[in-house]
Length: 142
Ligand code: TYD
Image 1 (cartoon, rainbow, N blue to C red):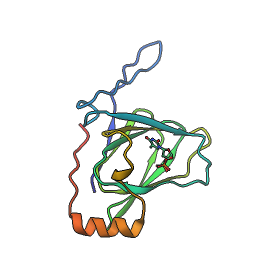
Image 2: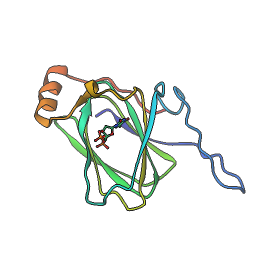
Image 3: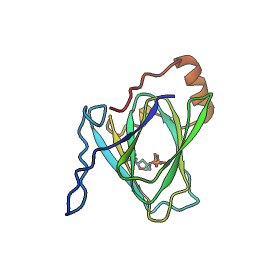
Image 4: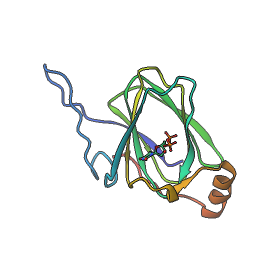
């Protein structure tokens, strides 16, 4: 499955900590969009879609949440609860985000502008698309 976790380098000193995200360096693509989710109800489920081409890195800036990923055959769940950790999600994976803590802030760094045409929002359509598409190209986090 085209996912990988990476720890970002923390520039820390007596004043506190700083993390820099740079396109094509510690973020393995050109950054075209950043968005963030906060105030998610603890029992809410977000996502429930796949992207045909979009690549993303998810970082939980505060609190915690869980990301369930599905390539049509295998499912895996990743808990995000560190602001120095990024989860790379390659194209073609069904994702669901759940179990948000009340204070969770989930930031997504994305390779494309928002484009509804890139979304597959129906799970059966996703399975059919995966069957037809075969392996989806992703890349490792540096
Ligand atoms: P939605 O896809 O339901 O979010 P999630 O993946 O967290 O379940 O998006 C919620 C709304 O926000 C929907 O009307 C589309 C809009 N939206 C944008 O306008 N730009 C964006 O970058 C994103 C991610 C969503």
